[in-house]
Amino acid sequence: MFSNFFLKSFRILLLPFALLYWLGIAIRNWLYDKRILESTSFGLPLICVGNLSVGGTGKSPMVEYLVANLKNKFKVATLSRGYKRKTRGYAMADEKTTALEIGDEPMQFHLKFPEVPVAVGEERILAIPQLLHDRPETKVIILDDAFQHRTVKAGLNILLTDYNNLFTRDFYLPTGDLRDLKSSYKRAEIIVVTKCKKDLGEVEKQKLIKEINPLPGQLVFFTAINYSRPYHIISKMEKGLDKKVEILLVTGIANPRPLKKLLEEHSNTYQMLQYADHHIFTIDDLKEIKQAFNKIDAGEKVILTTEKDAVRLLKFSDEIKDLPFYVVPVRHQFLFQEESKFDQLVSDFVLNFKKED
Image (cartoon, rainbow, N blue to C red; front, side):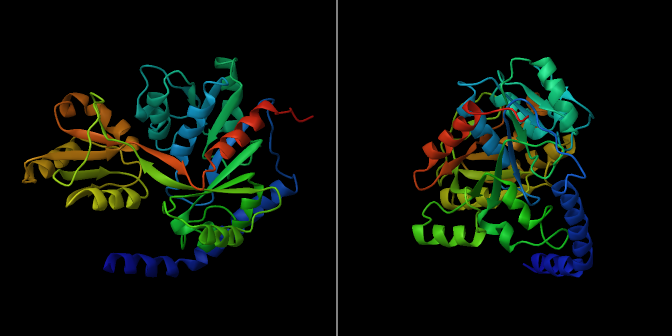
């Protein structure tokens, strides 16, 4: 509690830097709005998934949701920056690729959808032609976390905002978490409020829509987090959780709050080892995990981690294959029975896409 108070107080002291940051992104967006800086369009449907803030709003599960819904209808590919990878430039995932080479989120996409081309490249304007050269059959590209990168103009922008920290209530870095202008939400065709409570009511829904203040034609959807049955990190065997099982939670993600809430509901007690977002696990970390696990005095106990963390732990497959090490999958659950409406909007965009002159 004290640490949270200290952190908030410290971030308030950084307000002058936040104002300078706001000025910088305001000038940059103005240059794009006035077409002094150019945004490039491509001759195929580009779907951008992004947000206005740093931290977890559910971009990776949304990319996976889109891939799962489109891959049987169209030749789809994903393009990410490849955050915190050890390489640079353009790369296409193959059977020998590791998370260190392409980043944890792209590796997660590649493992889950091995038949789908997964590419990375810091400069998307250069990476898209390279992807199309490698996979000329591609008909749709999903751009992961590209909303604020305006060098490429997507035809469908899906903007995510966390129910617990709406962009309307946030402030600019480093005082808050915003990395883009609040007004940039106007560039999105679809806004998704993520991580909502599952019993969100119609009255609160309308209040949130009023607060977001969508433009005519903009659509707002609401999703909750849906956790599926955990599966073993190596064998993929599923396992149900009950209150008799003692859990060691291992995470290196931006926002583990929803996962902690899940464990509070489905276990009597749990312990946690929390690492920094996108943490690259070392052999010393693995020793720490094993020591913490061995100290747990319980008849039945497991180690639980996220899919994003799992791809960074797979390099230790020999060391963890015999441990009860499980991964908990996550997906978006659309509220108010609007999943089919969302799916249809995305499909219609691809089917009715027309190249700009």
